Length: 77
Image (cartoon, rainbow, N blue to C red; front, side, top):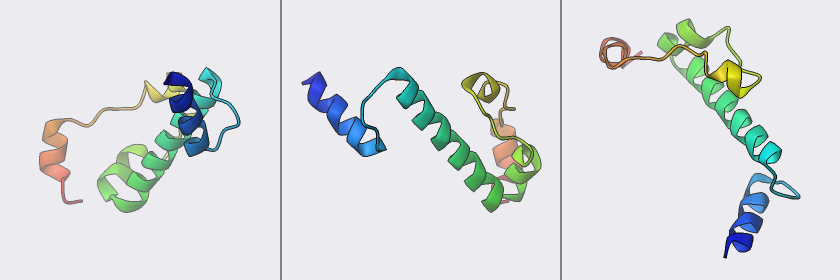
């Protein structure tokens, strides 16, 4: 069963094979796309993340978190 799932995932993400590096690259690209969308569509997130584009998971781990209070205060921005 795992082999079929691996093949499906590889096809879904456009990869010839499913390696740890391929998966991490895909995940990092999706994180970058999500951050770009947030910056482009929210003045609040633009103020936090506009100068940030993580190039690695180590850099991603340094991103500032938003708190529940931030969302309450700036939720509609």
